[in-house]
Image (cartoon, rainbow, N blue to C red; front, side):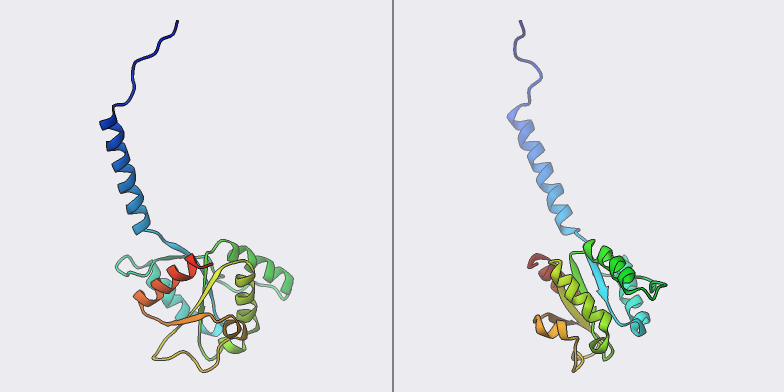
Length: 166
């Protein structure tokens, strides 16, 4: 009753399958896209949209999925706004803070940084020009967050590093 053989895999078949799986995993790792929340002062929306556009450009090395707030919430209810922003933060692995002269005084940017850190997200800053602004948000300074120049390679390395160190 019942015996046993038939239809098994040969060791050469198993080795071939192993190699195919390893190759697919390597390809998937090379093509990983990070889930990013971008924190910024609303007055910097045009420049942030340029950053978003570069990340969507197939010819650019910059690659991430943006889980940020695209349009301001139509509400004066701070609890409602915070709840909706938290949902977006929860979907990301890294927060990128767009550093300008305006972000240091933005209560929302500071709150978003604090919320990201509380939720175990990596936080980095990105700036245009030769140096970051003289003042950065308090939570950014106090937590020793790293700032990088707005360049594809530097930004992607910083996103990857922040993602693995969270």
